Length: 461
Image (cartoon, rainbow, N blue to C red; front, side, top):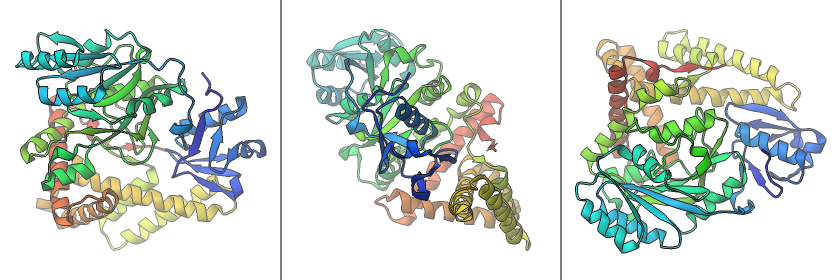
């Protein structure tokens, strides 16, 4: 399967061009790619258009490494872009009416009533919009409801849309362009908040830091990268890529499981923020807190299915030694941590030897790795390991000091990045409640499954 002629990619914002285009560094994990003179001539600035077998091979390699992304508005159109929308719903007639009105009547829609308490209200909305209704006698959860609709689809593509979403005009047509890449199995849009989602402090926090909003930049969806999973609250898929469908044994995390199964099969999942969908976020404190906790309970089922992907943090050996020395808080800790960084920098410099400024590049990469290690450690202490952190704080001043620094450092980094319309104090409270809820769910699932896989970091070389 090769990329078609006319397929256009652009270097990712994290990919650096070195030595007048003779090398590229970037991707996840970070790689150095040296370009031949012929390969350099294929680029027009930071973009590359597939014209022949050589350009198709290079473009595919850069996409696979996470060093480039498709330029969606310049991708060729599909010869057969027909699709069917599948909407799983349980009650929510008002939200369903809003969604079906946004979809319109030009495409086939299958509404799956997942055991509503008031099926008549759902049926009335479906009849109003003249769409197809499938009624399930009992509630089977979102995975089972989506599967029930998927099995009835006869078009090449399927759009899953939850009833509490609203698709913007052009969302589906934009996502369909990604399927010009024959390896793409699923494409997902950016999920933002509905304007009517609320105006309280939890609403403002969720509007800026929702787990469903994957950010403003396109990316491949792959474990261990900044976009490690994607929600199927709205997603476009090749019907023939679904194969076994969603795992209907899962009530939560079924979308993550599907993404990771596709990646394991060698398929691609693309995140495209140029396509947007509005979502009615939960904004009542109790409802929001419970939903975050429920999200966390998906950790253990995912650990059973994907133990290599579920780790809450991934460290290189040197970065683990670096943060361990900082946490030790001894008189010699800073000196020893500096020595670890120096050793890592020299090792990286040897790997990038041949570039124009190997030591300068190694310093930049080492510093980035150190910041990332600190951020991951902060997340571990305040989110995934918070029960252990609390116990440690009760017994040790050193643990209290490390926790305070980690918490404040994490908040500072995130607050600047997230640009939430909320003052730092309320943002900090909301962030800690978010961590408390999710972390509690992870621990509950780990205890239920009698396994610590979802709590253990992974060391990667």
